[in-house]
Length: 260
Image 1 (cartoon, rainbow, N blue to C red):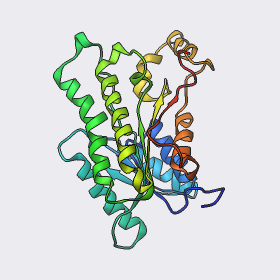
Image 2: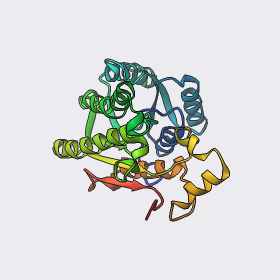
Image 3: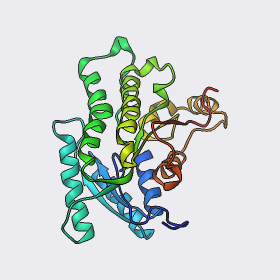
């Protein structure tokens, strides 16, 4: 490990990395030296653009395409990951992984009175079930001292009735983080969750449609601004590094002091 490129020699998989927070995480991990698998569900062109940007900056990356929230989604992700890694390394052999970032998610479930069974099932399938089975599939590949980083939400720690099923799904992710941290500690694998506040992404664009709405969101942060994807990615980079070796089972709020 070098001070300049602390993740040199590491292999990372970032789900939902074609845009927003996931894209920023992929770029940052690649900048730190990791070979990054950029997963996407629908946005193949966007994921390809992220890979191209990483390569142009001197990093290494490849795309992994597979839908989440469908039967056998985790198996599909890792089938594509294994094939992409073999091609990238230009050598057959067992696939390895050092860093899994469960970033992909879906939102917009609405309040209880507007909830439907289909929407609820979708929230749980993508935000909780998919990460659960992605970890299961990752474990045979994950090397000793690996890192699992789950992107949760401030909604799991604050009352968020306007999107209740979404908040519940992120709460499930937090619980999984805690249990896995205990289970995987003997292998030196750390498992932590990050809870972003309001970040400027497509997912919450509907909350920033007017200058007044944007200002209201910014005012909820102690710094009077909306977060940027890089604000989250930089914390992920820390949790992916050796510097975070004594942290596991933690929920790390990255919200700019929202609603303090």
